[in-house]
Length: 115
Image 1: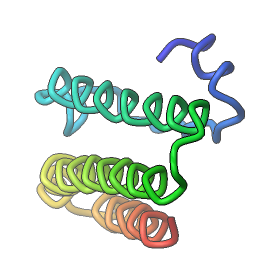
Image 2: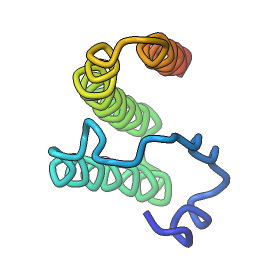
Image 3: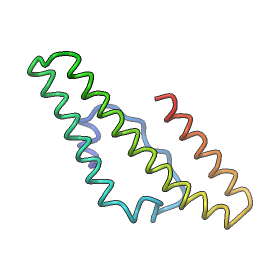
Image 4: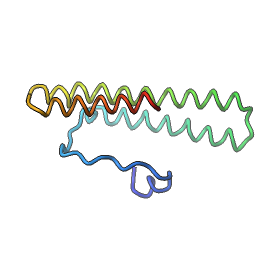
């Protein structure tokens, strides 16, 4: 997503700066992830159309639920890749890096549960 696209989409939290430059756990699946996100984007655009066309509220809510589930599924996939790649690498290195990665993953899980 470009800076312009992020700005047009509305205010969003800035991603936290991380000392680790890629490749990230999701890098090998990047194309598949982007394809999945484009499908989710299409679902959201469909929601906009539904509201614009005064679609019955229950039908809109059904689509909201489907979109939410798609995002949750994507998030869980990223989390799994983070655990397999970043946390596993930290476990191999040992030291405080593992504790930091586990704390980071735990915080991310907490955010997902609150959403």
